Image 1 (cartoon, one colour):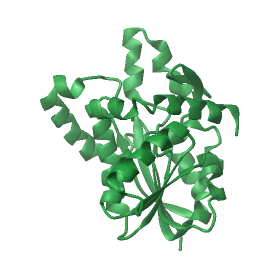
Image 2 (cartoon, rainbow, N blue to C red):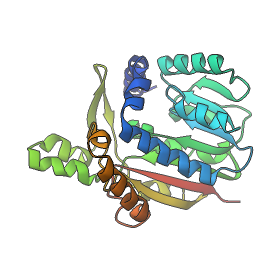
Image 3 (tube, one colour):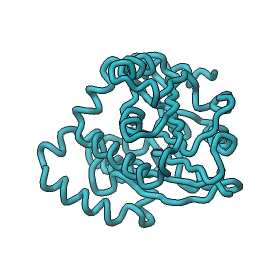
Length: 266
């Protein structure tokens, strides 16, 4: 395991105690998660077996389990998996959710299992500088016609560029660097940004792109705290605009996150 992977694991393990509160209290995080789930539900086939990468405390795993799907939830942060295991026991979901500590760099080590869908939420895959190596493992883990739905942060975020007008050059240009320093709970690590074309190119031999949608185009991203509470009517209006333009270029590239679904060729 490389040093950055270890740092990411440590950071998110430390955050596991407050992770659910942070995301449930932020209405913009709820909006982002809802968009992700909506896309996956539109792509899942009945009875699909799901492999989740960077599952965190299992918010999405529990959601899909309650919809009747079976999930192998993986994460490299032991603190996150401990929280998820507690939820599984409390909700009696052992028949639907299995957990495994595994870095997305090493998912090919999952033995004797095939899946219908691979999912990854909230830019978790932006924590590796070897995304090509992660993606190249997908084909051997998916059944023919299987899909992958990933939420990733691109290199251009207009909302961050607007921070120029506040004199915050660090935030405005951080995605243009080869590697961007980040920190959670006092632990420092690096983030990397990838445009949709990168994903499509890496997977072009075995996969075809199904959908591509930008998120947080006119709706401001999560660091605009309390935006929904302060401007509910404006949020509702901007959400409709996002829904109307999310599949158009350049908004699929110029956004805070994008959601891409690819299908394995038969």
